[in-house]
Image 1: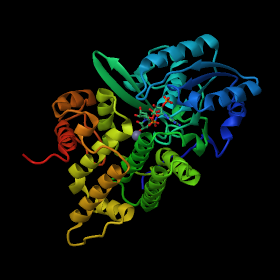
Image 2 (image 1 turned 60 degrees about the horizontal axis):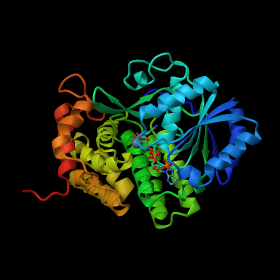
Image 3 (image 1 turned 30 degrees about the vertical axis):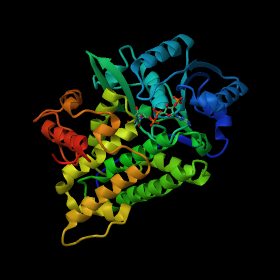
Length: 400
Ligand code: NZQ
Ligand code: ZN
């Protein structure tokens, strides 16, 4: 096991009705003038935003609004938010929505005290030194942004759409309001994208070269098993409170690094996927369902036994000691079959991606054959990434 630091500063308020006290949580976090960030209308339609406003008013807090965050959140709204926050003397950013809203809130929080362009952080030209505190009311169990140190934003730079994340301690929210009932209104497709994304957050940590990490292996497996079990229940009955609640907590644990400490993590699949969501505006979870199994197939022989362990412990595949590769492949097949069962796409065709765009995807990914590699479990060169995209592009097609 590697050395690590562990500090989880997010105050979680979990359960039915907790959003009605959000004003007191803002005060407890030191906020008095709030920028309230929301998406394209779901939180308004459900009445949630009004309940949040009422709670802020009840506590005598001033607030200003930034509405209209799109999935795969764009930089232009972040600039608008920074301007409002500066001109109104905002001291806390509150996101009410899914990962895109929370990431927009984080980006504004990073940008307000920074003299340059906030996207410098995403281009790795600078690191935020001070940021405003961020709180969130989560409406979609998926990205894990409510507990993560990550913030992902999209911007067009020199004619290329760049979707890029950066990590820093200030990105970890000061508080997260998690009421599973707020996810009852999710369309099945969004629930399934969320299930896929949170599984991917665990799997990016699970496929590691670090030895002696049996506890975090087991934590990862427990979270994955719970996601599969409760994911199935949620897809069958969207109003199953306990299934939604288990899924919601699993989504937070999947990405607040509780399952990832002391071990090398990979993240190539996420970076390969971000190029798909940037180019085709596909949901992040859907892109991951296409990419992750292709990444697994391509890297299978790097550590067959780890893939076989995943197969047996997460999907109950039978261990073939004579030929462990068969077990490993059965695990990938089981994963794909689960994605299909919940309505996720499995190939480029299903998300409208095109094989001929692969060179464009690789260019924005920015890998080469020598110095700029992707991933840690296996260091991937540009030609390796190309093969993974090709596997994803050709999956399910009949051989010519
Ligand atoms: O905009 P509204 O109207 O709210 O609709 C949203 C949006 O259309 C809808 N929605 C959210 N909650 C709802 C709801 N609809 C009905 N009922 C509800 N309760 O869902 C749609 C998708 O929302 P979005 O926030 O985009 O989804 P998600 O939470 O999956 O976030 C995806 C973004 O997070 C990034 C992804 O790349 C993507 O940009 N990620 C962020 C991470 C992080 N910060 O740690 C890590 C992830 O790996 C990921 O990269
Ligand atoms: Zn993700």
